[in-house]
Image (tube, rainbow, N blue to C red; front, side, top):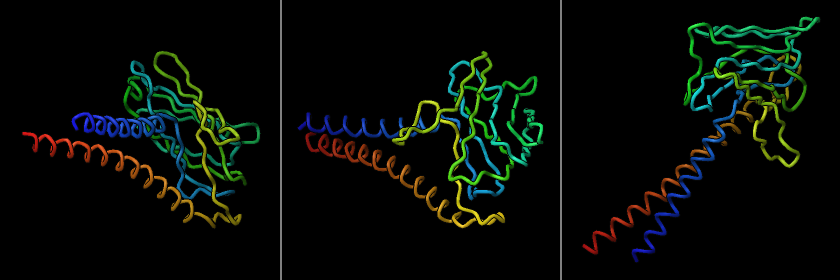
Length: 214
């Protein structure tokens, strides 16, 4: 019986660890979020930048933009933002740089960088290749596309899924996109809950058996 309980505990702990490890890996990526973003419309995109290094800080972020008419950065204390434009006045990239005296985004931390964008392309998705620079000089490029079979690469480019628009800035699919985001979050939290629940059940069973034996 003791062996059975030990195996149950081991299985539950392994399940919980794998679930949390998978979630941690996803959150380690540079990502972008823009609720309600639509094709041909304007939106506020927020780039979430975690520092993966254990010894260096993130001191610069460069995000490539798909030749947009409008790009306005949100003031962020301790950081300087610069939008680069081509000869037609279209925004091609934005760079956030830590100001002198600002150590940047330290190990184990993350920072959000927000920018108002438009008009977005008339495509189902739009990617923003990003380059993350660390205080030790290392540069990590987040620019790899998702493969044809849907498998996520090691360094995926931050990507938005755009709802269909009517050309006037109105969204025909924002509620669907919001429901999809909510469902994804719920499933992620549910997975953690199931794993931790299994661990709790196994621990409870072990306690009951030990109590009976004593």
